[in-house]
Length: 71
Length: 241
Length: 245
Image 1 (cartoon, each protein chain N blue to C red):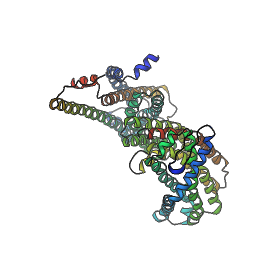
Image 2 (image 1 turned 45 degrees about the vertical axis):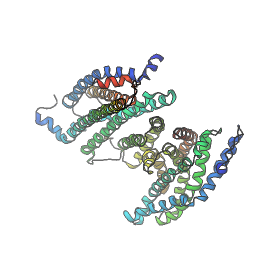
Image 3 (image 1 turned 90 degrees about the vertical axis):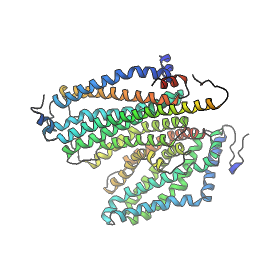
């Protein structure tokens, strides 16, 4: 270990602010990307749920039953 | 034999037709330009306005203006070009002329090149002709002004060629020209750097042949490649119908 | 080989494979990054000239590298998508843009922060930072273009063209910015360049680089799966998958 104490680790030879801000930014950017992707996934799934609901409506109120087209 | 009776442009079928088609494109550009003079004047006014903002907003000191002047003029010209490029294909897209272009038997890239050349003459050349006047307003020495005009002559065709790619990509979109500025600005940086670099070098008495050679190389690349990209982009934008 | 290429164009196949790969990539990324970061922060020796502030390199260099290589990958995907009409190519572009922009932003931020203890200013118009800024603008341009287009086919082909034109311009932009920089800056140590490094320094750097790659791959595959779910919304297998969630 390059540092004798926890204090030394935080202080990083006087440059602690810069080093820790950089690593903090790293964590934040990754968390932001993950969060964005989770939100994206939720949006896609809720979009699907809405789609299936509106189709169920149409099937229920309509006459003929249509098979959901698939591939 | 195919002829478009709309807008009085006739494209002949066959190989010999392409030169004729190119001339027709340029001729049409002139006609449209003179019929819509406002569209030509607006970029000029914009150009002068932007340049005028700098003495007002920063400093009217001759020392500052002499140093910042070439860069200010270059940036203002760049922005004016981007704004006018926004209109480049829009009217044609609206009246369906663009579709005819895409469907015509002539190589689309060539028509695009002819169009861009015509636009440069009608829209950008007037800007460059104004530069000596602006140079006086910015206290630029005559020699610097001449080099500035030279770099603009060499560099603005590149801006129009590359910008036309963006204009072709965005022609079917509603909205302001800010999108075009956003997309195109990174591509304009090299031209800006060497254009203004040449003027700075000239002001210090250094040779500018290197800068001009680089601008010339970029221009050659743009002349060859950009029309292909413009054609591709036009085909994409029109395909939605 | 061609069979694999053909399979790559099938959203359902890709969805499955990506789903199986993701946990591996994710956990590996976590482990490798942890090792690399701890090694770089705690165990790598301090730099002779810059002291401990150089440790930012373990974040800055991988982020910068990935910001650039993702753009190139997007251009390749754009070309593939235009030539072979592959929908999956656009899925890649859609998914990689945000990640690439994030990496470039991180590189920019860490590069600027690194400059403060070395140069005394929070920002400096040196060649690397300026090029990185322009790369960020390129990414933002792609995002802006895609955001303005609704038709998926036009959006795919238009962004492909924009990214390809961008990739052609990147060397030109870098060269011109470097040239510009030599005019306007005194020739001094480039703050954001890697100092010549002994093994004890470049080993953790390589590990961090690997970790970043794994992380980015994990993120992009995840985003691609989301995009596939949206694109193939009419497909039965998608419906069944959503119902199972």
